[in-house]
Length: 330
Ligand SMILES: NC(=O)c1ccc[n+]([C@@H]2O[C@H](COP(=O)([O-])OP(=O)(O)OC[C@H]3O[C@@H](n4cnc5c(N)ncnc54)[C@H](O)[C@@H]3O)[C@@H](O)[C@H]2O)c1
Image: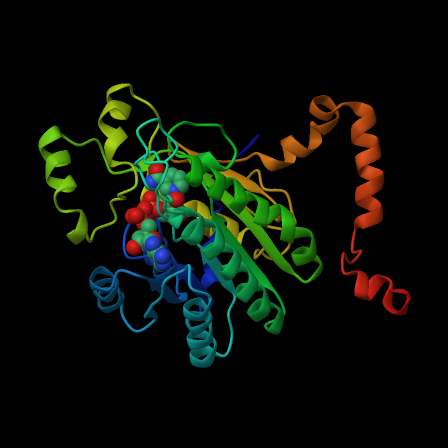
């Protein structure tokens, strides 16, 4: 892994950039909107929750626009992007952040096997990110390129328990990056994914935990709601915790890494900064994908790795669409 450290000069590259972001009523997305705004960007964000989103919009001023949008709906996401493009005539940065976790274990022994379980995590986290990236690619192409940042999770590359659809959906988000970044790089579109570990508020008392639990629906600050059930024990063990602002900073790191002049980038980042996985823990960012790829001969075996490379070289830029590759021979 490589420890990444933010080069503050790169924040200047955000001035007047147009950013689309999903899921910003609370938590990481809300903090990212604040940070993009502080650095002169124009932001159009979508969320299903209206009250806190409208508050954020009026708090931050004329460069922030809220569009009510369910990330799992293609037409609503298309409307979000269209609104931004019609307003500003361009889009530079796309962030797929909207996400949910259902904490009742539908794969456990107590689950009612006759009842179809909710797959809302797959709909919002995975399908929603696929939609964001598809529509994002379309608009970034029209604008000559740009950056896409997706928010996965530690559950995007690590095994876990009790969160099967969430884990599958977040592995899928890493899969989107691996499935699109080579194409994207050829089109000047850099696609990266961040995998935050535990992200919450500062240590809280049980009284506060009780308070927060019963005010979930009206929680309007940057405190995240995904991890309420585990955080007290987490803090007691002194395990590393991110604040929402740390993860938001990592989103900005990915969105700006390629925007410096004369090869200036964040400390530790290798250019082009594309196809990367950024693990965020204890407030720090670490790039881990380069090492996973470099160590392939070790975990896949040297011979397998060599043959795989030959296959990958053949497939590079090759269409899977037989109507194109075989044409009249079909
Ligand atoms: N909190 C953590 O520890 C943690 C760790 C790893 C990854 N993440 C990921 O970070 C992202 C942000 O989560 P957070 O921790 O800030 O939680 P959060 O609940 O505070 O934020 C999620 C945001 O997404 C919005 N949202 C939910 N469903 C939506 C939908 N269908 N369409 C549009 N918006 C929707 C919510 O209203 C909210 O504003 C998520 O993708 C989450 O999976 C969080």
